[in-house]
Image (cartoon, rainbow, N blue to C red; front, top):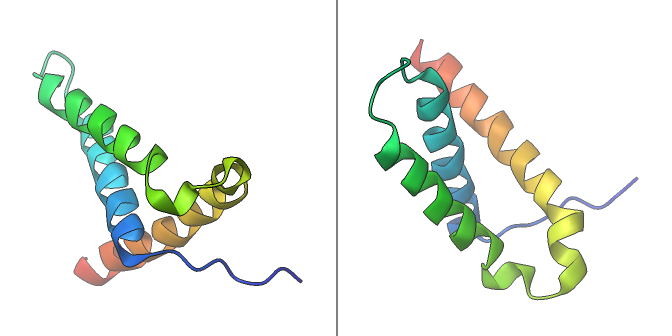
Length: 83
């Protein structure tokens, strides 16, 4: 069994913001002005990829999936609680 990943709180917040921007972009109607959302997603992507937590070259590959899983689970739980 693998040990659980531990991520800094600011990295988790960044990933949640990225997922929120992505969800908003996916829900935007065709023809809606999505430039702001696309730019936000690009900026968040750059900030996520260059976060100091990923200082070693292999850290991003091994931890990025776990980060998305951890935040996806918490975002899903938050949505269910709001419903």
